[in-house]
Image: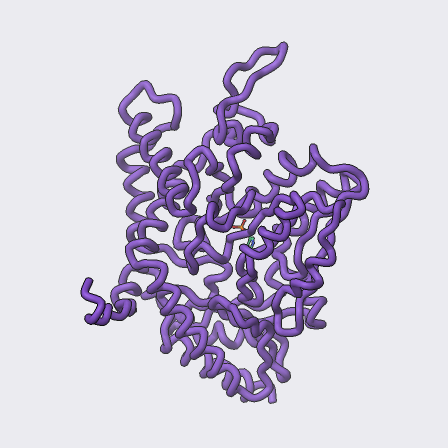
Length: 415
Ligand code: PLP
């Protein structure tokens, strides 16, 4: 391209077209328009994902990896094609993608298969104070079994990871660092590259919880240099109950199976069994084949829109939402990190978050009210709960207007 000719600006998203892709957005709720702002909990599904899963059951359904007939071959091709798609999306090799029921199961797999056999009494797992329970409790379960412990790194008042505090907690006892890439409660985007660099310099492996990241920012596990990366399809426009663990191949090769059953074996005898190759060694039983296909279709959808365009749209909306919420008297935002994704947690001085959520629901606004599976973080901020509005690609200013109108109703009712 001629350097004198300015490059065209990135095309903005066509919001009306994006919305038309999601049939549920036209669903009336409480007799009116739906403003779906609960995307941190789960996202809605585009037509292409619904179609891909429907197509599988109508035209391909059979069990995988036992192909002696046409349908079984189709199912296996679609299922393994999904593994290629997910690997490509994350920048991994296909052998490094283990299918799981989601982020939670992926982290439990690492806890039981990778960490537990290596743990000694006195060892530590370093997490942060903003982790989802899924990135705390599995470590508690395995450390308790070994006489080891989970250590939380501090969070600053604006909801950032206190990196200096985190650094002082890295020690020769640290067996693993586990950290979320994007906080589901605060929206904080953590400095994964820096965390990985510092942990690796001390020979400590790093697991990243990518549940809130993969639909919102480009992720390349090799560039991030992480050891483990966990994610869920349903947070990225895919189906519930499906997800993936990326793990470096050498880790997967060294890890023993976690669940036993069909498909994860090479041979079975009462004298002893042998295991399938990675990643199949970790995939016991008939998998969620439609889930894999739906996840792949969701990633196709994201890539077709383009993550840079999605991120630009969501950031503009986050800025607008932050400004609008800040104007509401008695509303306090929890989590104002400098590097933040589209999540707005807040409390109001006039009403409990549950009441705020209930009033908003009456106005057709779907938000979450509660601890968001981050009880230690609630304790850190001295609050029992927050209201959380979380953004996705199909949200727009009209959703924010509906939210703000609902919040004014809350103020009228409770003051
Ligand atoms: N980690 C984070 C940051 C999350 O937001 C969630 C879900 O809310 C999870 C983990 C758990 O994901 P799943 O329930 O899909 O396993």
